[in-house]
Length: 252
Image 1 (spheres, one colour):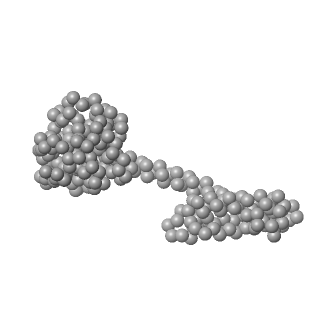
Image 2: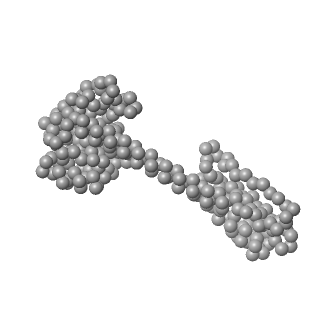
Image 3: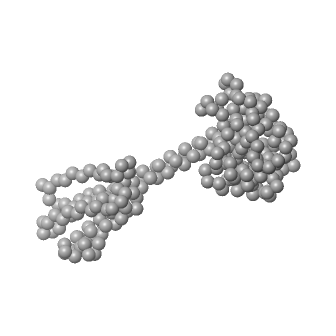
């Protein structure tokens, strides 16, 4: 028989559901019928809240991993060698976390698999249904935690970049006249935009003239903001260097 097979696990009994109250879709990559049946039976014994789908090759697994919450992967597959199956699955964008299943003679490969990116490894014949379910649950939760941490870090980096660019777009005016005050507010016009590219500057020169610049950049985002910062700094430099008004635009 070829293609994917669904191994039906009994509906979870009360108190065994996942944190979301729904069952998880788990992909079993196993070419041995006996081992596949054993995995299904172990999960069935503990009424695991899982929907198990079985495939026999890495090529099939790649087509299903994005729809799964976790992958149970046997390393001894007909279309893979060593850790190649694991690496191929981990290379799939938005693929599921992987728990490796190894035989007794290949137990050392489990540690290698974890070092290569697997969430965990289990040795066939040495685990029961609870161990198997616990490994799946932990793999899913660790993946979620890692994803959340990455999203938080990206958000923090974006906020830092936004603050840095805003400082460049909203400078401290170089105005000597104590009677002259100013107010500035920054509000991107694009809906939900964190940062636009518009900018302003004020510089007074020794003859008492106050030079004011309002810059409107087409577009929204960090690239446009960086362009606005560059233009503002260039304009201030030209003013302080004494370049006449009529010539500044050409230089910019």
